[in-house]
Image (cartoon, rainbow, N blue to C red):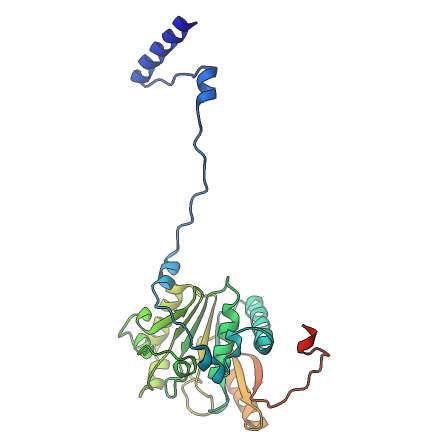
Length: 284
């Protein structure tokens, strides 16, 4: 038996030298160990690298509470924005929409606060990637509301002066803000240019967001938003209780409808809202 194994071994060596495969003996097959196979690791996409390149922003929780950005914390106080999030996602998925403007008839309606709350509510769904782009360049508020200290000027991205990542910050892995620390002197000309739209399309290609929220200027305050609405898929109109008139809502809705879809109207700054569904905090 030993001589037979030696003969087989010598024959195998000769065949290996000639490049011919040699069958193994049963004993050798038993001793052979097949290395474990593993799934090919997923290669991060270019968009993943783009998100990772953004500087991280850690909000000041006290400031967010003072500025009524309640959806950052979740819980009962965030429920109105979570409901808004759900309705928004239902409509965007049903209609294949991605770009949503948040605007108002006039100033001081709280549209930037609504945008920030909606953004953090969306970000709590980890499978979504959300970009918030501030195009209200006459009176930018997002950075002040959130406490972003970086000297961001997203208008420089729209005008092609600097890359997007130079004027954006990220919160986690799926929410990013492109804001402006100071007002712009020529916001209308920037927003209405074809070049700015090309820049926004390039940002979308780079970061591949599921949803882009545009914090847009008030409709009745200037022509900034009116000339931009045809770029978005739909718009949310924020009205302020005891401040915005019915006529202002009607006029603004008509202006939006001539250029894009009206997703809905949000009544903001209500001092008291009685539950009509029989649910209160103790229910949960």
